[in-house]
Amino acid sequence: MEIFMDIAFIVITSIFGLILLFLFFLLSFQFLFILFAPLKEKKFKRHDPKTKFAIIIPAHNEESVIENSVKNLLNNIDYPKDLYDVYVCADNCSDNTFALAKKAGAIVYERHCDDPDKKRAAYPIKLLIEKVLESGKNYDAVIKFDADNLPCKEFLSRMNDAILEGVTIARAHEAPSNMGQNLWSSVSSCYYARDSRLACNFRERMNWNSMISGAGMMVATSTLKEIGGWDALGTIDDAEFAVKRMIEKRHINYIPEAVVYEDQPSSRVDSANRNARMANGLNKLYFGEAKKLLGLFFKTGKLTYLDMWAQLSFVPIPLLLSISFPIYFAFYFISLGLEAGGIQIFDFMFTPGLNGTAFLTIIWTLIGAGIALIAFYILWTYQSWLGVYLDRKILGKNWYKEAKKGIWLGAFAMMAYGGSVSKGTSQKKVKWASIKRNTPNNK
Image (cartoon, rainbow, N blue to C red; front, side, top):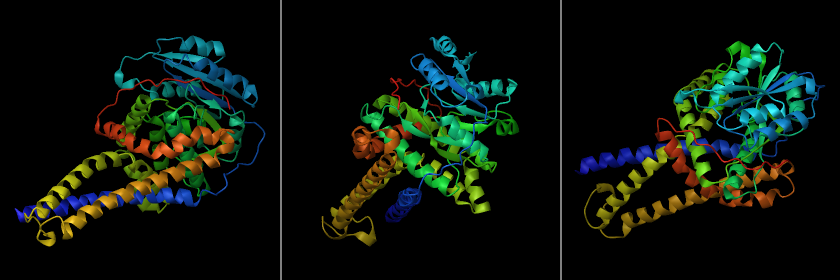
């Protein structure tokens, strides 16, 4: 019995220790983002407008926002109107998305599919890109927006600058359109401020790749032709597309001056559903294509591949912790309790009674767990404040008032999100759940 318990103790503590060590390694990149936060954003050389864009919007039952979004693109963007068109795919819609998008001036296609495995955004994106490439209009690049997105007036001009400087794949700077609505929208807004202003800015300045986000994603049509169109058909198509391009050793830039305002989830249910869906898709990507990024790091020595692999590695961590924590602490405290009661389990820590080694081990374990939680809170809160502060000009004069809930309570929300992320990673499929759209706020 003693030998079995000794072996079990060594195995369980070793696995738990390795998970914590791995988590510390992943967090080391977060310290880098903080350390280099003062780095100025990269500005691309200004060029006259020459790039012809096809803007695509996949839309499923988006009648509440699609008309406003299309009109905003066609009427409020400072770019020659003959150099861009707006395409919309009304995907399996049961509302007036098609009619409203067409009325607003978009080129609209309908898509109907009964196959549940093809009822996701990747397929209308694929259809729209096929239509763009077959149009004969000689577009230079495709930009993808979600139905609720509102890009800044200079968006196409700044993407034009980047393309004429040699950029072929890029992500935009994401900003919230409803940060001050409530706690949930504020938390999500702070997360994206951290991601864009800290992480993406650091990567761009280091000439590393950035992870693509669907809002404002840009791809040169020459690249799309080379790869045979849109080839990312998973649940998280934007991340899948990014990983595939990195494996091909293509570069993905971040364009900080191309700002797109995005509606953030404004309820606990919507936030949890989105997190579960994203975690499910990213987990499949992590254990599929993404492992090749680690191989590329060892082959080339380029830290950008290690960074992106590490970023994706955060996805399975909540599930690993939710399994390992209870097992570790249950085993540990039961063993220590038996030791304290005078029942010898381990020769190396036997001290009868709640004193000596057993008592101190329990106390220091609890103190260690508390310190870890406090450290996480401080790191997350400071990152959130720093990201929002550096983004304050984009977010508007009420930036702190709207962000304060997300800044100070965001760490607790992230811990709560661990449940929905674990749910997403542990399930084979996560059913798509529509997110309630909010009235967009023009910035």
